[in-house]
Image (tube, rainbow, N blue to C red; front, side):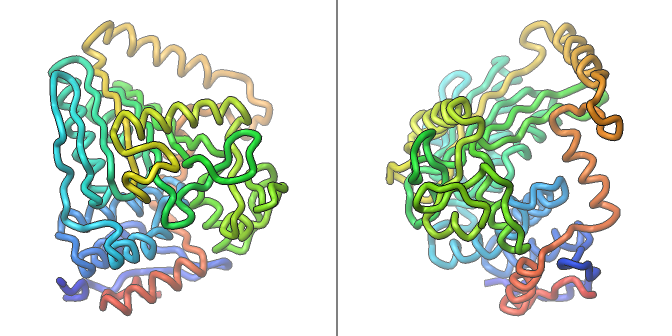
Length: 366
């Protein structure tokens, strides 16, 4: 294995009341070196480091560096494999199917977007499926990448199987046990000269990583998000990891959307739906890509701008909090964290330092 230490410079971190803050570039460099030390090649290690820290940067800490120990443990156990590019299963017309080969999801997602953009430019639309992939990270990342190429996109993700324990986290509407994946969806709309509109949402009341982050901070989760193993409402994050479940987002409406996402991501890709063990513990994704030039590009652009302005002009309930578009909060958070650093809770900080010592990669210095 390559050694991640080398002549990496010491980096900067700052103590805060409930943990530490670390410069986002330094943290990305550190995480990339960890995965290089664990066996990933340089390109893959950097994709993982960039993807995880980008999630922290935009405020999605649930999909950020707290997942580093999980990724490395899965690599060590052979659950996922480094340096394993997706294999093309089929390709005809505007459709391509990939098998992720249990490879690292951050690398597989890049290939899916690249192929989808190519198809959309050639055919006006493109559909790409991916099965049997490692964790794909923050799904909004893939919508953002497509939008940067002036391509609209929609991405549906599920986790097939149910082993090892903890992969299935969500209950069906009216149920008390785990039957569903978290099933996120992301949609990206490019805008000329403006930041894209990006929806990135799970169809469960929260993400498993957000409950994990609350546990790491010693916080309670908001009411109405999880139930314990007896099916009773709970705010204790430990209850989720002791046999509880996450509730559906929006009751029966979110549950219905989650069901459809599960089938689109799982059955269409060949990876299987939640509870089916064809590729246990793997991510599957269905992605649709559309070129605005395929039909009414000018009208679509002007309609989007007019609608965006009209919605933003809504009189706010609280004048200190104006109406925002999907993705605005993430951009504001990123702007703030680029200046102030990435906050890490004490548990994540300790885990990363321990992994740095194990792999001989210096952690950002205080």
